[in-house]
Length: 205
Image (cartoon, rainbow, N blue to C red; front, side, top):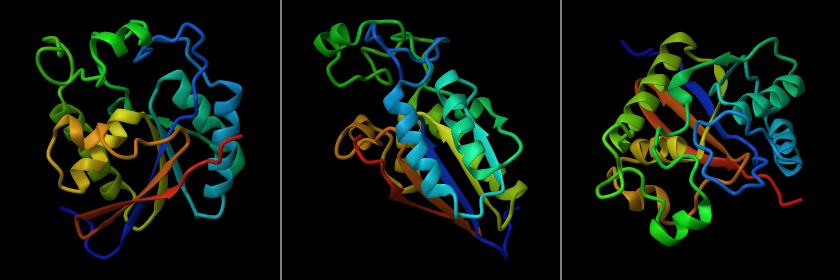
């Protein structure tokens, strides 16, 4: 049952820019942490979040996400970061491939639909479901509180589209504005009703 008396606020954050000199689709591969620019972006994000009365931090277990949330944790003087696999990057067989090759053969970066999606790749619906499940669990666990959550571009774009009740198709996440590194979405959950809006985008530095 949903909390019926208090509104829960969840700040959804995309990690900072990644150090990726080989220019590959790193996906869930290990060894990809933040670039210097990425650390600057997340420092701006942390400054934005500092006065938001955040009580709890969650993060994807991947290195770039954990590193981003550690910067936020230090700025907010919170004791720990909770890791949750529901916040992971998309599972795709395209990971490890050069971005230049993908631009030539799959210019829309579509890993969700035939003919590109492989049998064991995640669908948009699977990603939507795990992200919405996470939000519902947070509402039940932290009613009336404000928490911050660190995840990845496509999962965040998908859950944003789901909250906005848009169809699960490629246009929903590839057309228009794609989340910048360090960008923050504010999700509110009030009596089970969700809303989402962009509240912060780091400046280019």
